[in-house]
Amino acid sequence: MRSDLLQAALAYLHADLSVIPVKADGTKAPALPSWKRFQQELPTESEVREWFSNGLRGVGVVAGAVSRNLAVLDFDDDSAWFAFVDLCIARGFATWTYDLPCAKTPAGHHLYFRAPEPLPTQVLARDEAGNTLIELRGEGAYA
Image 1 (cartoon, rainbow, N blue to C red):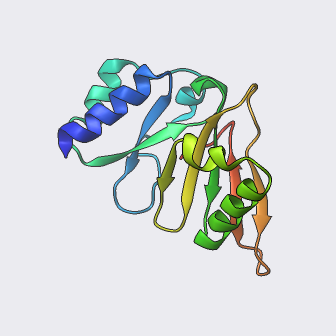
Image 2 (tube, one colour; image 1 turned 45 degrees about the vertical axis):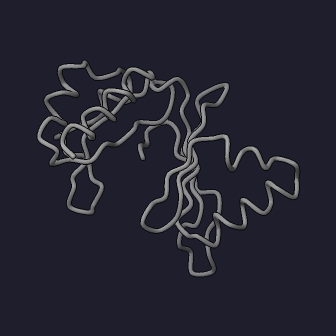
Image 3 (cartoon, helix red, strand yellow; image 1 turned 180 degrees about the horizontal axis):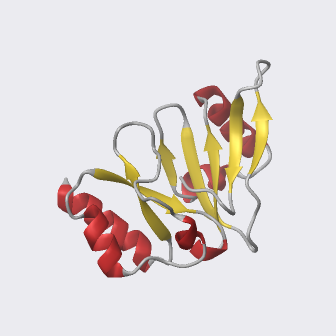
């Protein structure tokens, strides 16, 4: 597992994605005192090797301009994800749901794409109780 995590982090870095280590305790919090620098510049390969060589951390990918305008649609609920997939199919955008990189999360899904310009982070949908269902993670965010 140790080398798999390191290899994934290096592959992301080589794809011009800014990566940061996140705590592997379930909180998904950054495992750095500050990750602000990595919202503006990519880490070095030696930093990535240092962070991920022990396999004790997860990989966070920083969205926004630093990662060539990476944006992430974050679905915090499976029903919101499936409603989005159905809508894409109905509107003729079915390829979005299987051509774009997608990751299953404990609560839902992440759909990754690069936009023509940096996108702001914003909540796109909430449930009746005010809980976030869909969020666009862009500038100043990571997934």
